Length: 260
Length: 271
Image 1 (cartoon, chains in turn green, red):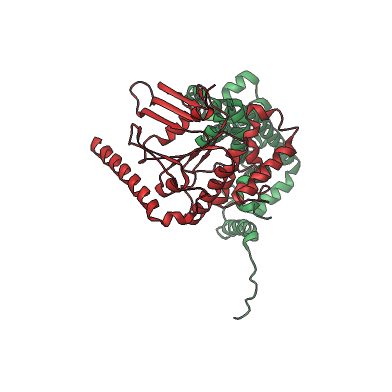
Image 2 (spheres, helix red, strand yellow; image 1 turned 135 degrees about the horizontal axis):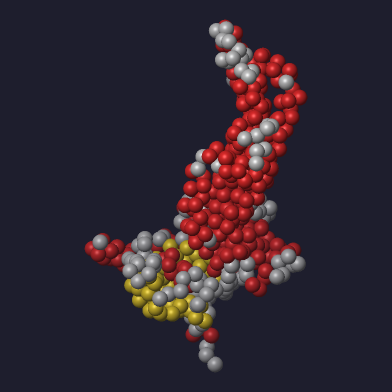
């Protein structure tokens, strides 16, 4: 047999290749078609804008990150608590389910004006909008984890005299953890949506507010700079949640654990 | 004083069990059976005959509407912790090592749960010993998903036995295994029963399995389930797998098969 030359595996580089290609195509398109900067600024123009407006972008990015993370933290605490409660009893589940569907169905942008009446313009409505939008997937996932305990497992434990609390502590809660950590990835992305919506509607700072102000001045490169910053913050937080998920519930991702 | 062997380990008398209120499905009706202490009993029957209901009645997960269920001479009115259970699905918890899975019942059973933290080493040794008897020596530190299906089922037997139950209830524990692994596990359970005085009730579809392992076989009718035949199996113990190729063995299997065929035919007529 001919000795096979080891091929280089480009899989690890794929995200970079794709991202760079996207930006290259974008750059080429906006230059080649000579699109005006107020329609689609080239990435180089957006990058220049990030540099030019860096102090403002940095301050507003931190503000958005702050409201998002506080809202997200509240959603984690509240979602975990309500998820456990809902998964605990059929009665609570049945009773709260239609209410939760109703809350989730309401577009969160419609809630912002009410939050502004209660708390005024600024940080608090942004935090609460992030909380409201990120809360639901956490509840549903935790409750699903609890609701899908194998009936045989429950029988084994109940036959031994286990109380509901025993079954929850030994089986239900550990079992729902992969669902919980999985939902964090969705929740953190939604939390950004929530805080930016609120900043766009009613705020004096934050990336949402900055982009709205830039748009009203036809400063389109700055609008895109805001988008890029949001994407970067989103990716970083998502990666953090994915890492946390692997770290905390590696047993649920078996292929990644078969190292020993 | 009554002779303790006269009190059956499992006594079921004239039990009706109906699900979902007065109009619900009647799962078993007029069910009567008795399993002696130390006996290996098998329950066979067509699918949907209420074998799983039987499991739940004996372990106290269900309380019958009429009739009585007693275990070790005491009427069952709540879950009985002197029973160990194993199912077709090994239901190991994937976040616990095999050893910790086996120790799980001890964290629940009243008698042990206060001691498990302080005497963990002693219990772990016991679990290691059980693992050795089922041929899983040294696998305690592995996670269940690192074990094959047959190995998981062995571990599930250990979990059923760790709190030294007087009664072992097995619900088709070998159903999902390949033929060779199944035969191996028959021998494991045969030896476990032979070396202790545990009473075993095995619910199964497999007639050869029932005849090979059991001292007494109950045949259940189609729903609503009741016992239509009961027969003793007198092959001497310890039994070798080879007896399954003897004419006498085949006769017993054939006879049981006839009873089940009749039960199935009646079910088909009723539908």
